[in-house]
Each structure stands twice: as structure tokens, then as C-alpha cells.
Image 1: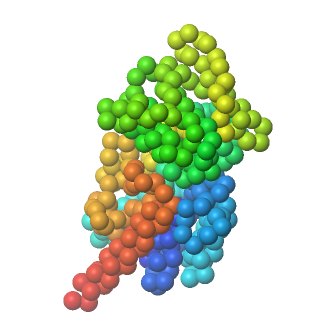
Image 2 (image 1 turned 120 degrees about the horizontal axis):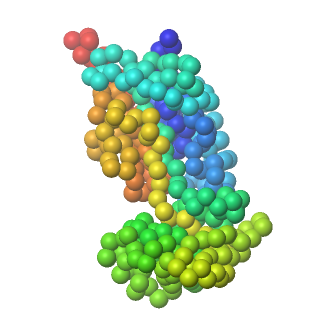
Image 3 (image 1 turned 90 degrees about the vertical axis):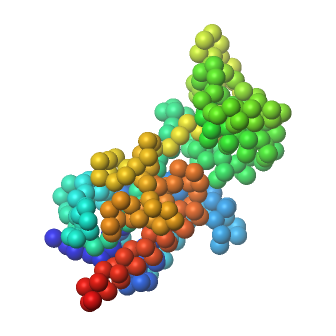
Length: 316
């Protein structure tokens, strides 16, 4: 069985940043990318809010830059997905992770950066226009729709926050709520209701996102009356939640009720010594590339200090 000092699961901004720091600390990290190398940013066309790219950058190109930098310092980047884990509860033995149901690697430290996946409506047109006017992150992409009309789907606190954010940039925001009431807190509900350029359509669902190469409008229907209509829009935002990619760790690591991994703030430590978490897999609030990268840095530093402490204990 192959043994490594530092094993990184996942390859978004958090995973690659952890790899850069771990490699520079001589931990010789091995990274398994998962089934979507680069994570959610590979589904994003233009990234303009990450420092160091004054003219913006395409999401896939940005992740390729991260990968090259990690490899420059000696990170061994491999394609594969984690299929099972066997973590040593007290950290006394190396942790084991099996990839592709066939290859098992043991590691002194494991950094989990498996991210989270946006929930979508499941429409063909939504998938086809993803990155071309369809987005699951208003903070990431709202700037591109400045002084334009957009549609947002959702009824929770996140949807209300994103609708309020878009209202500051866009001339009009149409909010589609599937039921006859919000799921959001009263405070968030009142905020959108009192924003002049937000129109709320209750009992309304999306039938199709219109447009061939870019969003041109949204066909919706009232689920009580069956009435259909087309809303002119250049942007379509889906804010119905995210699902952290943590099924693999259920019953193994502490999670919240949604499935995000819990860490011992401000560190990245999970409930098992030598296992750390970074990025969207443990962050249900910010979910930005730059914040994910910051937690990746924390995880690598925590892993380095954990190993140093163990070596000191052995020498003593």
C-alpha cells in the first residue's frame, strides 16, 4: 500500500491552495482531483473577483493555473475519486482512503476539499445555458448583468440575499417562489418585499430558459392556474441551495444538519486527528473561490503543524 505524508481529496481553489502550501512545506502532497477536476469553477466562464487577474480569467484557465503552480512545487496530481475511507479515530495509525474502488492510499494527514454542488432545476435549457446567462451564484456573476433585467428562483434566506444583491446592480429582479409563501426568515422576506425593483411571483415555476447562445427570457407558469408567460431577462439565477459533497463521510466525521463538515474554528481540524477540511465542503456561508483558497491555506498549515507536533512527541 502506498503511503504519503499528506493526501488531498478534491481539486478546487481550496485543494490546490492546500497543495501549494503543503508542497512548499516538504509534505510531498498527493492530490486526487475527483470526477470534476478544478471543481465548480470549471463550469464558470468569466471570473473577475479573484485578486491577481486584473482583466478577469476563464474559470477553467484559472484552475489550470492553480494546478500548474501546485505541480511546480512537487504536488502529485492524479485523476480519481474517493470511494471509501478508513480513518484512524485517534490518529495513532495512518488514515486510509480508497480511490476508484480499487487503489488504497494510506496517509499521515488527509485534507478534504471535495466542495459542494449547486442544486439545479433539472431543465435542459438551464444546463445548456449554464455559464451563458445561467448562474447559481449572484455574488460571483451579478456584475455581468449590471443595468439589465434578471430572474432568480428560490424562497429561502440565500435566495433573498442574492435577490437583494442583484437589485443593487440590475434594473429589475423578478423572483420566482414556487409556493405561496417564502421559506426565508421574516427579516429577509421584508427586505425583498420592500425593495422597489424586485417583483415577487408566488406559485410560479420555470418551464424553460429561452435563448440559443445566451439567456433572452424565461418562460414560467403559475402552478395554481396553469397560466404561462414569458419574462424578458438576460440572466437566470438559481438559488435553491447547495449540497456539500460529503456522502462519503457520513457517520465518520461531524456534520451539520445539511451535511457540511464541522471544523474546530478557527482551525480546519475535523473530529479526527490528522483529518482536515477546507473550502465549500465546510463553508455554507461564503462559497467564494478566494475564501475557499484561504481555508486551503489553513488546512495545509494545520497539517504541517500536526505532523511537526507528532515528530516532536516521538523524539521526546
